[in-house]
Amino acid sequence: MNATQQSARDPLEQWTTFNEAMAQPAIWRAWADPLAQHAKAISSWLRARDHEEIWFCGAGTSAFIGDALCPYLNAPPRQARFRPVPTTDLVSCPGNFVRRDRRILVVSFGRSGNSSETIGALDLLDAQMPEADRLHFTCNADGALATRQMPGPGEQRVVVLPPGTNDSGFAMTSSYSTMLLSALACLDDHPPLALSETLDRLAEAGEAVLGAALALARSSPKPPARAVFLGCGALTGSAREAALKVLELARGRIPTAWDSTLGFRHGPKAIVDAETRVHVFVSADPHTRKYDIDAANEIRRQFGAENVVVLGAAGTGVDLHVPAIGNDAWTSVLYVLAAQMLAIAWSGALGINVDNPFTEGNLSRVVEGVTLYPYAAAR
Image (tube, rainbow, N blue to C red):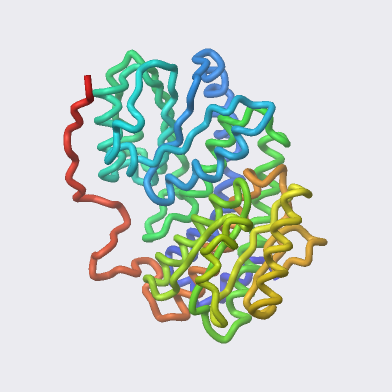
């Protein structure tokens, strides 16, 4: 039984978030040809502009895209010029970032393209860095990232993703995965596979991963009391997004943590107890994989096999098969799909409104109402 057949009879289908998560493989397939055209044009533009620094900007989940992409895009033979710059940092501490002494490209990600920090970042760039080029990836054709023009002299390009990526549920699902893949298509000048082949293989694997993750969530009598997600390199960024998905959709009732597999030993492992489930994202890199597997084995010895879930390619003693497609950066979306489905299933099992866990309004789908203060640059 494939994931689509299983979902047709699943009670979680009542939730829009579940259906949006399940739709991701189909969205990637349909987006492949239009994305290839965008990537061709943007790659040519980037070569002509010859940027010295490239910033990845966004807030929350949108910021975590940069965390996943930078380790890979900065690796040899490429120049180490990519930098994660969350809009939450850029807006609150502009003095740490604003500069006009080099050719900079600001890549912005946003599901709505209208969050307070997005508007604040655009205002700041207009006023303080008008020479910087901009590349926007957004899921909302009517949002500021899609429609707002910059004053120049810098240049701007915009990629508006398919309407289906503009998730209506609280949690970002297809918006995250499709923005990440779109950015890779445009910025990876040494891709491991042709784009059409990559997206087709990811879509096929995504269907299997979604179904397997749902079955894994249902295999335990109850959700874990705590959840931890670990990974190295690009998969550290994926672990961060995975932890947030569970924390959000469980309404904070499942505390989460994330780290690199080696960094976790340096204090953060204190979160683990007998009711914690640790999810280890195993790298496709043979060297890195050794550390991932060692971490999983150590936690098994100390806390029991039932406290560890290993996700990765076949032949590495995994509990959930995630095939390596290209490399960890391209495959990273599959690990996040697994976490999305775990989070959705656990949220439903806890009796939470999966589409809007915070019905009282403490958290909202689009962050609004942040007071934005004008920045007077030091002279």
